[in-house]
Amino acid sequence: MNAIAQLFSQLGLPTPTALAAVASTPQPAAAASLATQTTIPVGTAPFWVAVAPNGHAYVTNQNSNNVTVIDTATDTVIATVPAGSLPHGVAVAPNGRAYVTNLGSDDVTVIDTATDTVIATVPVGTDPLGVAVAPNGRAYVANTTSNNVTVIDTATDTVIATVPVGTAPLGVAVAPNGRAYVTNVSSINVTVIDTATDTVTGTVPVGTAPFGVAVAPNGRAYVTNVGSDDVTVIDTATDTVIATVPVGTDPWGVAVAPNGRAYVANTTSNNVTVIDTATDTVFGSPIPVGDRPLGVAVVPDGRIYVANQGSNDVTVLVPPTLAISPTQGSAAGGTQVTLTGTNLFGATATIGGQPATNLFYNLAGTALIATTPPGTPGPADVTVTNQDGSVSLPGGFTYVSAATTLTATPAVIRLNLTTRQRYIPTLSATLTDQVAGTPIPNQTITFTANPATGPVTLGSATTDVGGTVALTNTIVSSTLHTTNHYTATFAGSPGHPAATDTAPLTFSGPV
Image 1 (tube, rainbow, N blue to C red):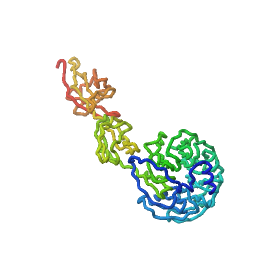
Image 2: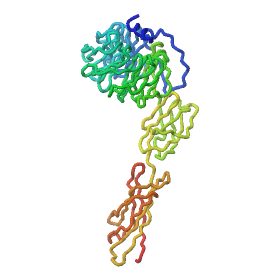
Image 3: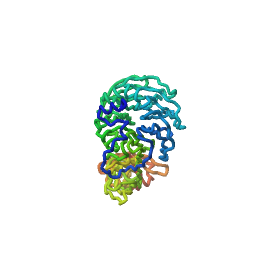
Image 4: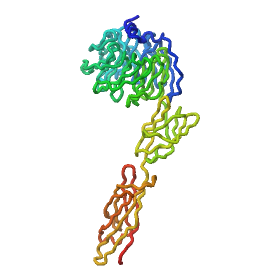
């Protein structure tokens, strides 16, 4: 038994080098998830997986001492690359080189992902396991039994620093702010390293036996705690713990998708827990995968790759598709829409965060008819949820403003026989929501006279609670005495489009 196996045995945890030989715990069958999946056979006892910029996934095979290369565009194996003894961790640098930690030979294999050939071997500390690459191009390797991190310059593939950390470091991840987060399984904490200076800036306590770590787009770090079956959430802006999320049994790997959801591989319960990083709550039911899932990675299109050590394969979780028709409707709600996708039977739907109503399904679960709730004018997210998860269509439905009508009443003009130069019109109009049939108060209406020489603005007024507005005692010049109609205009406001109407004038008083 090697040093790391002894360490895990002392902690009462499943050892990385023995996981493949441990019998799996039977799991109850789960209902169909909104996500679909495929399985890709790889080498013996796959441990970790990372995705290169060219779209190839690199899977470390612990017991066959090599790396399987998968083309994620076709989900086919395109190459097998030899590595050192007991390859475990893998990360890809911005320059396209993959860095594979070899637990048994205490070094790192460097693979050129353009040719899938080994171009260098870099000696590091004792029992290297986790590895991550910072934005500055430095690779950080966690050496489990030498209690430090080796820093590799990926431009030259040379060691440029060694940073002491906690006891038995395992996982590494780098936040957008340039801080590296190293999980220390025995000291039950996370060491924070400033990658600009390669110095330790702090230590964060976490759960029991921390292993995996990943950073979400919102800047939160998610640490899997194998011993306490939960995930510690760290705010990387302050390096403080802000939440603890219960997950499955023996969580190891974790990765965050572009949609902000964290995927946690639960090694003993053979499934993946999904965490909504916006709320730090578990989303849906765990998704069943292969036997003894360990490493997790995400490709840019949102597909999830899970390395299953016990079944010698990789599970690919394919996000479901969702479509909606029509794609727009009234902000007042009440539009009937049809959602199409998979596993929709019995699902619920929200539009703009509000539940849709009057749900009807087809037996195949490929169509869901619903009525939209009221919403704010503009794009709204569409989300369908069943007991195993959800799928969203960001901005999939657009709320449009309810139509408005403006009814102008005939202008009453009194003719002053004494001066015969002043005309005093009384103008009025009513503004109404055409869809809801209700008046629209507190809106500005502008009145104009319309002589042959062109419009002349007479004034503006605001609608009352009944949507009515009146403009009185407005004196107009004698040049407008030939005007035969007046216009009321509403310029529009949030939720209500512009409207206009014209009415003729009538005379009152002596002529």
